[in-house]
Amino acid sequence: MSKKGKLRVGVIFGGRSGEHEVSIASAQSVMKSLDGKKYDTIPIGITKKGAWIVGSKAVTYLKNGLKKIPAKSMLAPDPTEHHLVSVGHGRAKSSPFALDVVIPVIHGTYGEDGTLQGLFELANIPYVGAGVLGSAVGMDKVVQKQLFSAVGLPIVRYQWFLSSSWKKNKRQIYSKIEKNFSYPMFTKPSNAGSSVGISKCHNRRELILGVNDAVQYDRKIVVEQGIENIHEIEVSVLGNDTPRASVPGEIIPSNEFYDYDAKYVDGKSQAIIPAKLPVTVMRQLRELAVRAFLSLDLAGMARVDFLVTKKTHKIYINEVNTIPGFTSISMYPKLWEASGLSYSKLLDQLIVLALSRHVGKQKLATSYQPKHAWYK
Image (cartoon, rainbow, N blue to C red; front, side):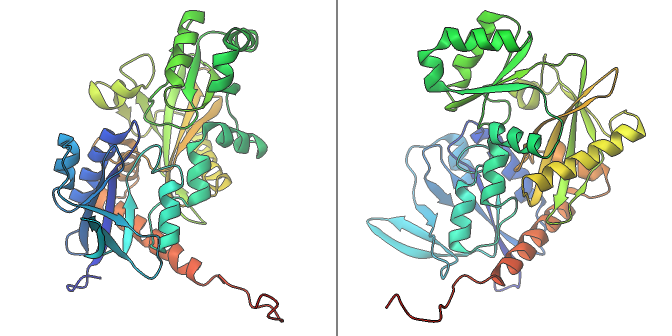
C-alpha cells in the first residue's frame, strides 16, 4: 500500500495486438473511474512492440506512437519483488511503484490469452480477471467451442483449419466448407477480438477473401454457419466460484454485423438495455451465461455473447470475452449499471474478487516434503 493507506493499482493497457487502440480507450475509462480516495493508480502502457512504459505519460506516448521512449520498465517474474523494474543503460533497478493488484485491460493477444496472466502468477501479484487456463481457452474460439459442446451448451455449426493447410489445399478446404455450410457464413481468426479479421461471406469469392484476411491474425481459422434474423445479445458475468449475471442487452449494429467499425468508429450502433425478449428467454440467457463462465473456469469478469433467433427464440452461445471492453460505450459496464452496479462500484468489486482469489491461492501448498531426502 501507499503511505496514505491506499491500494496501489496497476492498470496495464496497449499491447501487441490488433486491439491496441481499443485497449487504450478502455484503460482511460478505468483509470478515470477508480476511486482516488481508495486507490493510487499506476498507468502501465505496453507499446505495439512490447516495451513497457510506466507513469502519467504512458497514455500520451502510446497514443502518439513515439519511437523514442524516455524510460522503460517491466514486471519481474520474481514473487519476492512486487515492484516494477526500471530498465535502461544496461542496468535494472526497482522503481518506486510497488503493486498491490493489477487490472489488465489489454484486449486480444499477449494480454487476454493467458500470457500476461502467467507473468502475474509468477510474480505472485493479485490481478483482475480469469487465470491462465480460463484466459487461454476464453481467447481460443476453437477450444472454447469444443468445451461448450462437451458440456452441452448450444453453439452454431463450425469448422476449423490451420492457415498452413489453407495455403496448401485452398480448393479442397473451401469445397468442403461449401458442402457442409450454406451462405452466408462467417470467417474468423480463432484468437482475436473486437471483430478484428472477421468477415461475413455471401459467396465463394467473399469466403476466400475472408479466410485470407483471417490468416493475417492467427494460424487457426474458424468458419461458422451464419444465422439470419437474429438478436445479438450480450450478458455480463461477475464473480469467482459463485458468479452472477447482469440483465441481458441487445446490440443493433450499424453494419450488417457487429464489426470493428460498428463497435468503435461510426458511433451509430445502438444498445437496448434490457433486451426486449420474453421473461423466460431472459432468464435462460442469464443461466447459460453463468454456465459458460463456469465451464471455462473463468474468474472475476466476462461478457458472454449470444445469438437468439427472432421467430423461435432459439439460443446459441457465440463467444466469451474474458477482458471485455471498458470504454464509456462498452456493454460490460453498461449492463451492470442497468443491473444496479455503477462503473466505479464495479471496479471495486473486481478488485475485491482479485484479492480474495489471491488470498485463497496463497493457502495452497507449493512444495512437498517427501519422507526420505532422496534428492540430496
